[in-house]
Amino acid sequence: MPLFPSSSPSSFSSFSCPSSLPAGAPRPSAAATAAVVVARLRAAGCVFAEDEARLLISEASTPERLTALVEQRVGGLPLEHVLGWAEFCGLRVAVDPGVFVPRRRTEFLVHRAAARGPSEGRIASGGPAPVVVDLCCGSGAVGAALAEALGRAELYAVDIDPAAVRCARRNLAPAGGRVHEGDLYEPLPARLRGRIDILVANAPYVPTGAIGLLPPEARDHEPRVALDGGADGLEIQRRVTAGAARWLAPGGRLLIETGEHQAPDTAAALAGAGLIPRVDHSEELDATVVTGTRPPLGPGPGR
Ligand SMILES: C[S@@+](CC[C@H](N)C(=O)[O-])C[C@H]1O[C@@H](n2cnc3c(N)ncnc32)[C@H](O)[C@@H]1O
Image 1 (cartoon, protein in one colour):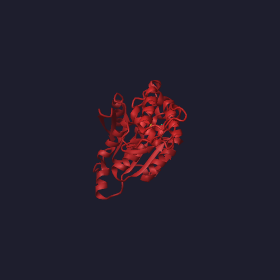
Image 2 (cartoon, protein in one colour; image 1 turned 135 degrees about the vertical axis):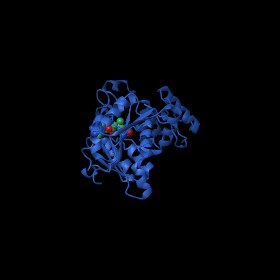
Image 3 (cartoon, protein in one colour; image 1 turned 90 degrees about the vertical axis):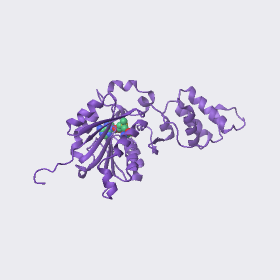
Image 4 (cartoon, protein in one colour; image 1 turned 90 degrees about the horizontal axis):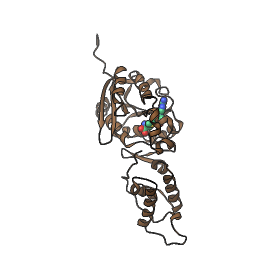
């Protein structure tokens, strides 16, 4: 799993890992503390040991706490679960134990969703806020970042996992987001039918047979329901796609993160559901997003 390099400034405390010092030894400098933590993390195979050490040290309020955090990390817990937060699109997003860690690549989904669409005109004209739905929301990182990027949004999110729902409620409260627990569209208020301007979904898309190939951090600490996309990885995406036309406003867009090699099949599913598909790829983030636009209503007879 990609680990987030730190971009947040952190000041080193001047305590050490007690387990690494003889009793009665003088308190080491901040640099010495950092060196001990870096060495411990590096020995455990952490690729970004310096960045992680800086984050762990700045998070710990006592030497005992620092020791506990380092031990958790060395034991294989994802850094974001150790810290209790992840950086995503410049936001600090709470990530509870057992909740999917938002990945850096998913920032591309936010960029594509915020890039253009009916919402822009509305925001500019001072009309009603765009209706935004984050399906399969996990921590709610995508919805939170999208609301921030758009400036304002009538925001809803859904997840089937109660732990994710609790976490997303905390993350989406500042944006006034409402988080529903249940299966895809099922818990959404019926009044949103035909009204959604931007529907984003980072649904699980790992093929069942490839779960065992994921890094242990994902395999062992993220729930299966967050990873497993069925035989070809696209089972949940297809269900998201099949329901989209009924929920999108005319001109509204569904944006799905998918694998680069899965994108043609994701796009075909969108086309089959009556949406106009488009595939975008970011080399920098190694991310692929398929967008399906519900055709705007034509003038029609007598209009
Ligand atoms: C890959 S994670 C993505 C989480 C979040 N969108 C993100 O990018 O960080 C997929 C999420 O989908 C949720 N999920 C899986 N199946 C679902 C379903 N049928 N209905 C709603 N949520 C579902 C999982 O609980 C998990 O939180």
